[in-house]
Length: 441
Image (cartoon, rainbow, N blue to C red):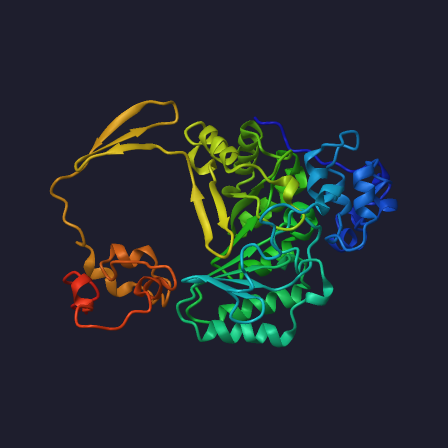
């Protein structure tokens, strides 16, 4: 049998009654955020003390539970690096942006991001149980003045009601699980009233920062709104405790599918052995590794960034070396709003008209013979099931034969050279037969 997960409690909390310690409201109301508070738990470096005393840095708050996971004698403890600010956080770097993912640009109403064809991101709060120093949304997260108003929530619901291609809604923020229970349930019930919304997801780090919040009462409430999925956020094996294991057990027993979204962070988990231990511990608590994100180009996160080559190296050491369901996708969330782009080592080495050459994780090279009598579109009778995706066809429009080109903005104007429309400029000359023509039903 594998070793059981352990519980930790910092020495300062040894006399706190279990009833209080295991109360999530007590954890929230006793978060640490100052030099004086944090130094009662662990000695601070000059860099940490300077950052904590600097006005205007991204908000600091740490639950007593989560700070107890830190080894106070290790200044490079991986949990410590994620939640205690350092002076490096105040250094600018090339390509740093306030909103690197252009979420606000793709927001039809306040707090709703509609980037992909059939799903939306719904920001429901700006508050978290604790604050990650590399937070993608540090421009609004942690700021009570940015909290979403009731009228903005109604605008979000109205947009979803009149946008039938949306079938999947992800609640995030901030962290939805810090909301008052009645407000959280109202959100879920209002979404469930919309017929075309099939899936509700919650993105939360509360089970990691404050597993006491995952009560049986909460699980019973969530269970009423299936199908409901949840992604949690664990970056290092040290974050997986007995309390987190108990929380994920309650969630999975309530029928909630769990995934993990980690961020690749220099000095924290940029090592294939750490990542392998992380994914193994995750699957032991019934959490499937889902994404491993490249760190975003967000203000304050420069010292956490690694080259993309480090992520590829980690994926090389996971795929084939452990179970497939324990291997996350390595993702770059494209700056400027391009969305999530998966990257992986190159296993396709070459190809011809009837054969491809592949390699495996060991360097074993093999061939796969392709069919020579394949007829595409035998499943065309199912095309009627396709949802409308206005304005977001992308490469599929090329593969489906609807378009021949994807052109940069202003392409025709640039190459027209301000010329006149004349007799030789006939659009039909460069439109192959069938491209763009109405399809038979």
